[in-house]
Length: 431
Image 1 (tube, helix red, strand yellow):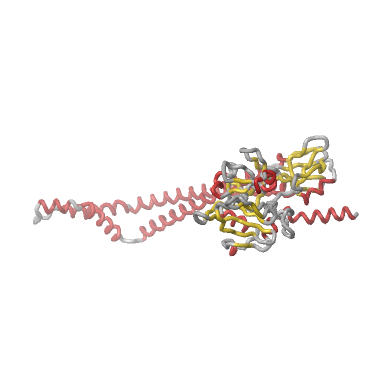
Image 2 (cartoon, rainbow, N blue to C red):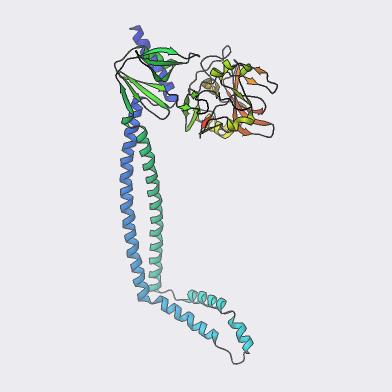
């Protein structure tokens, strides 16, 4: 009974962390598919209604255009207008008996300007009677309907764009992405830093997924069926009546075949591990010890950042860092400050272990920032268990660029102006 109570309490304790990381449970996965399908049907109905409305409006415009043509024809406005203009132009073209040929020729050179002036004057002098008022009203009605047609077309384009988005979502959450695996899975091993456990099928190969430690305890109990739900950034496992998250290694660097965990925060997708790719120059293992690379990644000088990340990924700019920080709770008034910002944000970003006394974090967002230390311009390394600094791609001037920092003695995330020749960690963000 005590074990069962512990299991229930433990389930509730991790539920908040699952949602805070914007992962999907199986229930949410299927609900998202249904919601997208329902919205798609509703949007298509709206498109049908808008299309009918536009066709009706176009017919209305045709009818009004016909009324205008009939009215113009009955009023004979164009003929009257043209006759008045031609009469005055003809009068202007007459040669005065006192004019010399040279004076007349000079006057004729101005005929175009005079014609325009006469045309404008005749138009202004036309009598506004009941019939011309009717014509004005018809013109206004036509203009109004054409403007409505434009707005309806814009709205129709927005709805059609939404259909494409929803179709993509439905494909992503489609039930066909569900795979039933009729085998027992048990907890078998964990990786070097003890953070992620691997699920293995009994008597066969390992399941290609890693499970956060605080969720892995549930997998100690065997179930008859495991259901795997594929997702762009994560997989989900259903064991019995419970649903759990399996974080996939979905980023594989084609340059050295290394795989990285990734996490989606807000609208951004981040590497959940420090970059470890060895560039031609300017990247270093901490303390010249390659054994540190597997856990902490490499340290990079700012000048090599442009070529550091794998294809489709890049070093985040200072603006992208601020977008990320705002998404996880840093107050907008603090984003541009230099120094520590965001109460408890640093604690939520730091890993659950590895930091100097009292400095461990909660790893709330699954980004698992470790105290990877720094390397100065002379090649000396320091503070591997006390701090980490992570580059941005934004420079302040010829010698300095912006970075972010976490410290064992602080619960904040710091924004730094850092010398470019100091080597720091790199986290790549998806393009």
